[in-house]
Length: 323
Ligand SMILES: CC(C)(COP(=O)(O)OP(=O)(O)OC[C@H]1O[C@@H](n2cnc3c(N)ncnc32)[C@H](O)[C@@H]1OP(=O)(O)O)[C@@H](O)C(=O)NCCC(=O)NCCS
Image 1 (tube, protein in one colour):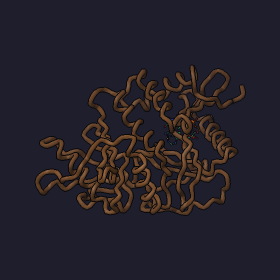
Image 2 (cartoon, rainbow, N blue to C red):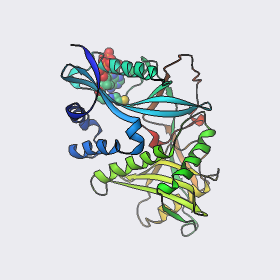
Image 3 (cartoon, protein in one colour):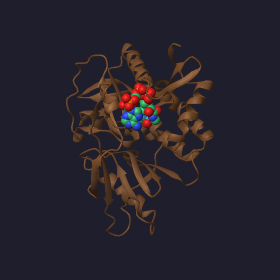
Image 4 (cartoon, rainbow, N blue to C red):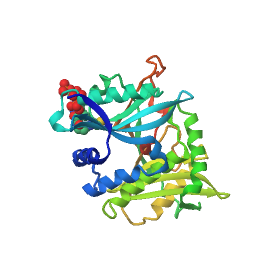
C-alpha cells in the first residue's frame, strides 16, 4: 500500500489523539485533550500557522506530527521555519522508517513552499534527528531565587495583561531578540497564542493543578514589563517575560510582588529559560543547566545557509516558545 501524508482531521485525528494521549495528556482527560487541541486551532495565530498531519498506509494511521509555521530571527534575518512537534509512530509500526518517512516528506514539502529551516524539540536521544541532519541549539534553564528581604512588596503597579498590551509586549520581545543571534520573531498574534495555550491547558485541567498568571507593569498607561508564569506542582515556570528596562529591574519587582501575594506558603521553585542578560538585580541564579528538551535545527532550502555554532548566551528562546 502506498504511503500518503494527510491532514489529521476527523477520524484520523481521533486515532492520533487516542494514540498520543497516554504520552502527552498533561493531566487532561481524553475528552479534554481533544478539546485542548481543537481550541488551540481557533486562535487567530494558529488558524494560519498550526496543524497536524498523519502518514497513512491505506486505512491505517502509522505516524503523525504537528506542524508550526514559525519565523526565527537568525543572525539579523527573518527566516521561515517549519516547526515540527509531537512526532509519533503507533507502537505496532515502530522501527520501520515511518517517522523518518513522515519527517522527510514534511521537510520536502516545506522546502518547496519556501521554508528555509526545520526545527524541533527532541525529548529522545538526539541521534535519531542527527541522522536527518538536525543539529542541537544550546538552551539554558535557570533556577532563580528572588530576594524577598526589605519588608513588603515593592511599590509597582502590577495588573493582569490583556490584548491592549500586545503591541508593547511585541516591542519588548523585538528589542530583546535584536541582541540575540537566534530568537523567535514574535508578532502580537503569536504572543496571544502563547498566553491562550497556557490558559486553555490550565482551564481544561483539574481545578488548581495549573495556574496561569499573565501580568504587566504599567507606566503612563503602557506595559513596560510583562510576565507569563505557570504554577504547577509547587514550581513556577516563567514561560515568557520582558522588561523595557535592560536591567530587568521591573521584572524582578513583579516577581517580588507575586511572591508577596502568597505569604506563609512554601516558596515555589522558580525556573525559566531566561536569556543571558535578562537576570533582574533582585534575583540570584541558583542553577543554570542545559534544557531537558533539546532544540534542534537544520537548513532546508540551501544546505549552505549559515548556521554557525551558537552558544547558549547567543540564543533567546523562552520556555513558552517550545513547540
Ligand atoms: C521516536 C519515534 C517517533 C520513532 O518512530 P519510528 O517510526 O519507529 O522511527 P523510524 O523507524 O523512522 O526510526 C527508528 C529509529 O528511531 C530512533 N528511536 C526510536 N525511539 C527512540 C528513543 N526513545 N530514543 C532515541 N532514539 C529512538 C532509533 O534510532 C530507531 O532506530 P532503530 O529502529 O534502528 O533502533 C517513535 O518511537 C515514537 O513514537 N515514540 C514515542 C513518541 C516520542 O518519543 N516521540 C519523539 C518526541 S521527540
